[in-house]
Image (cartoon, rainbow, N blue to C red; front, side):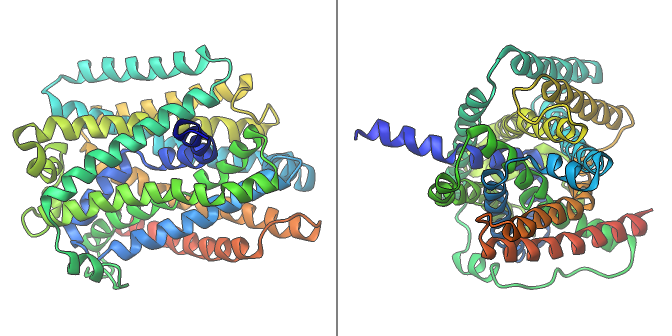
Length: 421
């Protein structure tokens, strides 16, 4: 077998996990990793590592659920508890996606601001043009899965190479990086508004890495691939590689930011892409701001369509209108997800909200909706084992741990909202 054929087989195997990684690896991952590195230095690397491991487990669980069930999650929920229960999950996932999508659109605005001094009208036109292009791409391909998979692979690997080269030049302290993998609590005051603001980047970091909604979507991606249980088992290692890419890029950005910005820039002053771009100056010098803006744009674009498809597909499935990315109603509701995300971001811009802070806030807010989705995945897994389906017990244990984490994160996020109000 030639090298090209082996590479092609590897690409086909890790496709679903690459799409999941690209959905999660949006601009929120880039910006929140930068904010956490600037604010906490290397000390919160253990949080990112834990989130990556939980994401691996939940994504693998989603893959097994997709391969072992004859019905989609929402179809099973509708048949068991009634259609209203499935609609609730569909709407909940759609709202999670809307928050992520608002962050993606705000990131495009932030990238424009970092590259030029465009007016609000120009930003709106460019944002509308980008979303229009995504819609044309979505509706123009009768079979969207394969083109989407190839595009995400290129964008994710490009970001990995670019940020990796910059990390080499910034020369982080190896011992401090290792110490950052040892669990420790963030050094913040408790119970006041300043502490709540300080924790938003950390909550956003977990939300953009351990995305239960994206892991849940793995059920649908595996079904679209037509994978059997044996194929899922063969592809499990490749799926781990896909999520590891997500963790690698986020950790590279966090470490780079810690080395370049921590102690040099006050976290509350990190409000623009130009300031965050200082971490790229070792490699790109005066061009850092423009290139970082391009990186933010690439991250936004890589998750734009995949993230919107997540919301459109699960909502359509909840309503009983289809469950494949190629179904008409899935595409129509995906367009709706794109429109809602764009509308929220446009309102934020016109209201004068800071784009970077808005993105971090929007990403953190999504964790409120994670517990019901995680609970549904566990319910499907445990009931499936009772029916003799081959869902590994280890993945259900990891999923249970992940569910507990989502409960804590949701409670912490709600507490932060109350403290900030």
